[in-house]
Length: 369
Image 1: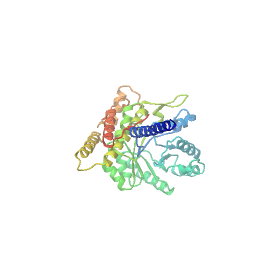
Image 2 (image 1 turned 135 degrees about the horizontal axis):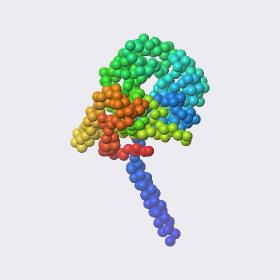
Image 3 (image 1 turned 120 degrees about the vertical axis):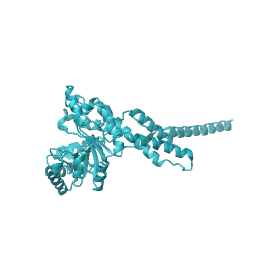
Image 4 (image 1 turned 90 degrees about the horizontal axis):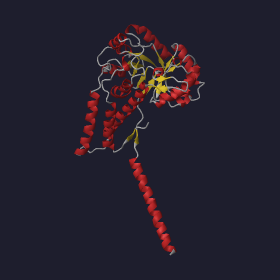
């Protein structure tokens, strides 16, 4: 009798163990795959002097990180400004060391001195990214001597340099600027990007008066589809203080900041699909495998072709502004309040991309919050 009970107990334990193992395998197989991190930089120009609550700076950095940013700018009027911002931003997960950070200071010599002093005061100096000197801002073609003098001064300090710049000026200065941060609202020039690369320098992109935080669709377009097609190393938008609403308790996201985050997710999904197409373990002789890859690649190519090189839809920026003034709108908030980007069916595009990823890899991608 005792022997029978022991056998029954052993069998029950054995079966229970197999059930647990089977459930674990099923759970593992069904678990969604995480969305790969962005391989480019997304950031907002941040100047603490333009924010109403300096005591909320940690919350500002936290919000930027939560909404997809992995870099920012640092405005500095002293070494203490650099230390405070960079150490806090690192603690909040905002600064990815893969991406250099622009320092915007009074002049080359003073800014370099501030940086040297700050390195000795920092809590997290071993985690600090590379810093770049910024300026002159949006230089014109006829300002060549000023730009060349600035680049020589930066080089003398042992620092790389760059600035926000329009395409025609970028052609002029790509030889001397390490970073050509080209205006994203202008007509995209593949020849310019190739010239920047030929010089051994980096193509970044920015928006100035294009995004002010009120147009969810435009923010999503630039951080998503536009970034995916044109692929600058870093994208910076002016500015954080227009992408949030100040409250006594802390910052609240503007519609544009919500779109900003959604666009970054779109970008990451599309990059994940590119990776799935490139690595799909297909047998070229297997019709089904070739067909799957071809369908996904064709869909992706058609999407890329639908994204125009001219983000303003061929209408000059000044025309939009003149229309705003005619309608009596506040000049501070121009056409992008209500503008619709050239491609705007974002949710459908994302769902189709996720479908092709699962079709190729057998994995569901987890988007998360």
